[in-house]
Image 1 (cartoon, rainbow, N blue to C red):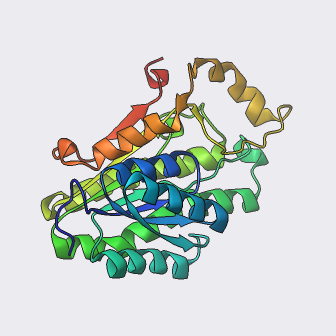
Image 2: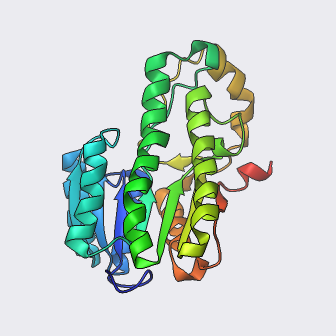
Image 3: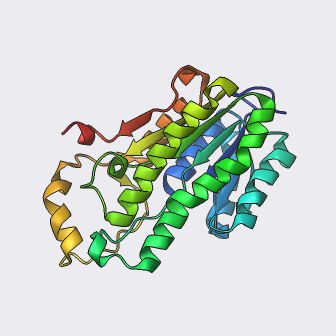
Length: 255
């Protein structure tokens, strides 16, 4: 197993690491000399980030595929364990936005895609990683939740449900495994400058209903600011923080 859950040499999995918050998190861990599995659906983006990780002082391998596929999930966990000797940190970051649809306007395809990527995939990868962390007697899991984990006015029905689910999963893991040396926390980003797409029909009921609340977003954050919070929650500096949903939102959740 790897030597420590903090500092150089940590074995880290980052999903959605090909861009945005995931990329920023991978580079943040690379600066600490971590060994990183870059999991992403886009092979070109993943390869670019792997090169950036190496330039930043880390080591990277890539696993390409859709995390809704159990075989891809298994390959991510196995790659980290086999290449790096264990799994110290799991960053469940990959996710997609919905179209801001209200429940009556949310089709099955949209619901199943958003829930599948945002909630089911992180659950399955966590389940695959836990035996390795339990065997080592330590581990840190960090989820990318959302402002939509905290309120009903930040996204559509599917995305809001998926991110509320992430908040619940984070807390359940914290309770179930706190005596096993495993911590589970989440960041809850507000508006963040990434390439995540919001394909919304502004004339539809959902976007129209949400519009009055979106003025409270404040100044959007940089992906690096979200990555700093992820790195903190995964570090020994946060050794007694477990089950927390940390807003990184410039005070949006305080409004």
